[in-house]
Length: 345
Image (tube, rainbow, N blue to C red; front, side, top):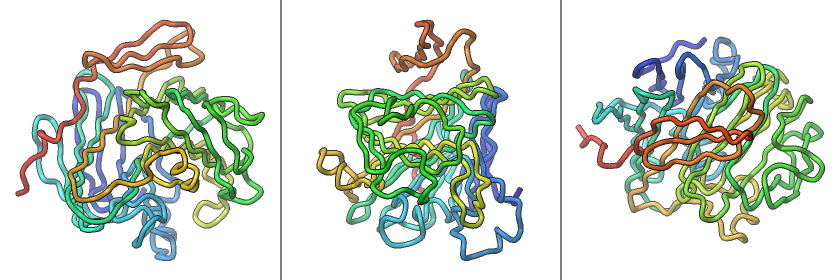
């Protein structure tokens, strides 16, 4: 494992680190479970020394916030947020705050992280202040499955694949296709992680009126559920990256297997024209202050469940309902508030 500068947070049986030199999460542990994934080449000196590989790929770990998303805009892939230093500003009301040293299009970014004392939950918040122009953005948590799993989501009104495959000849799903709900997709089942070599990208647009957006990954071998939450008004799309040995370039070399990226964002995401035609925003206008919320939850797989039928957040409680209609409830509290943000030092 590459040696990093990490700032560690602990609460109850939960722990997480932020690699402050690049802004990636590391070592997330929620109630003894490790829900997220880091790439295997982080410990390979030859890869870490190769400046031809973007730093975000060399150090790819667990989750990071991108602005601008992907290759949109000038600068490095996924922007300075994913490969530049963050400074720990301090702690307030249980939230640790970090400042990105490098402005993005003139905007100042602050990251808030908070672990729950009572439940296996990590909350995140990004506050974007000032700047000019417009910027796309997204979270990038990665979930690894040792032996496959099932995927369930909040209601979607449109599901799309890009016109061009990420890796020619290595796509499991047909390119340039659209569906009106998550699940059956032109003869393929998006809810089951593929057992074949593939590199695929699926863009899902949230159903209007959803107060809570969610993606649940039920991991077969691990017998747990990784649940990722967003606020659809802030992050209108969810991009699912099925990465199962299909990426051949160095340092991937066909060995990145069993990984699902769950990328909640506001971005063009390789299908920008279709999104804009459907009235879906693909960037944030900079200048006003924006607050972006996100959460990662881990829970043991309840006996008898084979799917997730609903996830709701009401009266500060998170309710996860299985396909047998039984529910698991967790204390969630409130999202991180901008009012928790410490004043600049």
